[in-house]
Image (cartoon, rainbow, N blue to C red; front, side, top):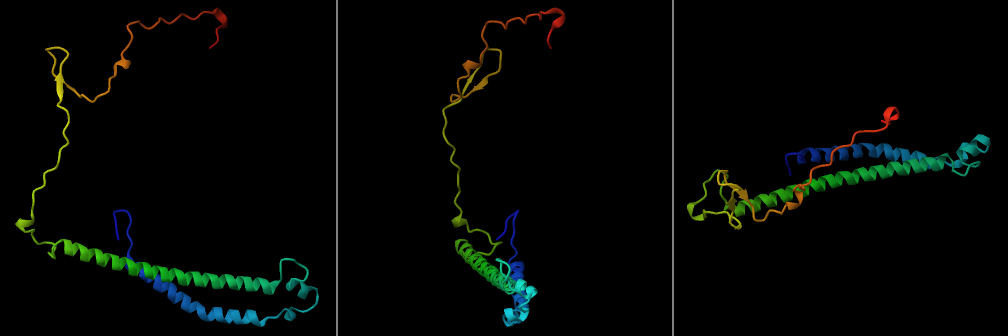
Length: 184
């Protein structure tokens, strides 16, 4: 799949998908350790004094540290899932593009009569093609005087009589009046 302004290198896309998969595999162990640590911490571990109550969300409606840690970890999990889906989509895209390219190449080969690229076309298959020229009304050449060269007249041209000037001359401009107190 390529064009003059846009080109996809399927090998690079496939390499990126594999790199994403490798990074996800590398993050799997630290993610599991983080999840185990978050689940081990109980609200009682923060204590019952004022600091412990504030850390567990006792004096706040927004929740405490354990809830926020769980929300952050859920976000990390969602990111990892989205990244895995992205890698799978890239791999699927490469696979489908290659299948489409192979199918198109096979169809072109079939239409080409299984000839190689440099082979000559057999003479029996060559049929001359003459382009159709639409028929128009005949062109009329007219001249305004016998001495001038003929000019082209298109019978489909619009009538432009409305652009001709009137025979009345333009009115003369009036001289300004007003003396010293003229406004500019």
